[in-house]
Image (tube, rainbow, N blue to C red; front, side, top):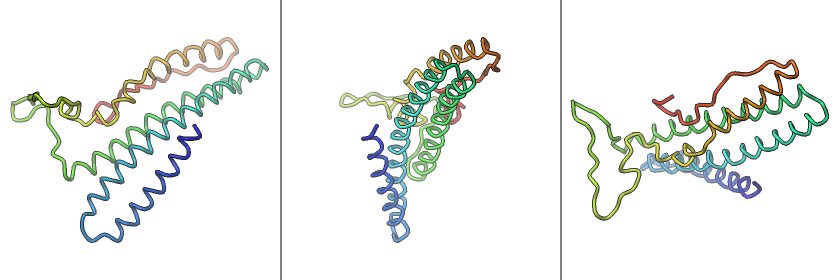
Length: 185
């Protein structure tokens, strides 16, 4: 995680430089906006890693507190871990929305259906890559969407609720809905 932290600092420096350059630029500001949006995607990925490390820390703390008999504190740590998962999802979705706003200026987004016609992807014999197949640019966050965080969240919440209920602490009934983004939220 040390490396992710250092990379996040370097990425922040890059964003600061891009912002300064944009304020001085007379032309091609959109190019700098695109570079900044790419840096935002990197930042979000780095923060995901750092936040997952925080989740791990909270769960370790919860385990230790449960062993000591500090029920409410242990449950609070698990709740913080679950809340961090929600925060990671919100951050990912907010970042994607900002990126799409920037890229929509110069990229013609594909529409799955328009005027009674459906998008037909024509494969070529040289390349076949995911961005060609998606209409909503979800390929930018695909690796995150593939993480089994909904299953993890449900299992952790179930264990948390079982422990909490056994000790007279209120249960929680939220879900993560990890794969929801953009129009799919």
